[in-house]
Length: 275
Image (cartoon, rainbow, N blue to C red; front, side, top):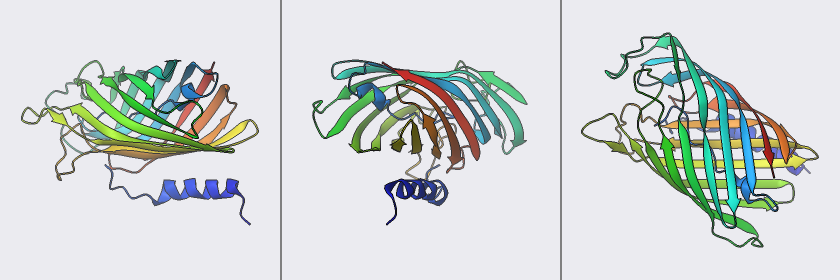
């Protein structure tokens, strides 16, 4: 009989290589809900780290290249059923490797190096189920504050809003969570001042001892009518990796892009703590 651990590993591998790129906003997708803050005896959770991504497209600049992120963070503080979340990236550096199109008129930086800060998100989490329920259901809504300006070409200087409904189940050493919802994203198009993508994420974690196997599929889907506004292209990626520790933790994830404007590959390293 195949052990649950191997079923979990094979499922995540299949997810990373077998999901089609039909799912093609901000240059990075919204991070999954910080579910840890709803763990028993936990009111505060914080994770921070760095990322290095290759084959990332910067739509407004019309280039693809490598993206270095320093100071990625996701934090949440809870009181009762409600929690406040904050997240973002302190520093981004984009190195042009290849040009595939003309830059947007708002972009003045001609590369090859582009630096900026952001984006940042501030949101509210509301637990909808009692603490003794077999599963957890939560509502999430908030805003993504833009990077500093359009001129660098890394991202849009536009504010986004999001609202999602999510759930989490735990069975023994396995934890599975999922969320989906809608976004209202600002646009550069003067005729269509917003885009309304579908946002989603699915995460599974399997713990054994101090180690945890981790897999996530996340992104947002835009352009359901067959037309996508520049700077609001779809994002989709799979993440697979391992973490060590629980209340104090270290995590390393490999990123595999599944959409045209997502990175071809990369790594995310983070440390975190809960109390």
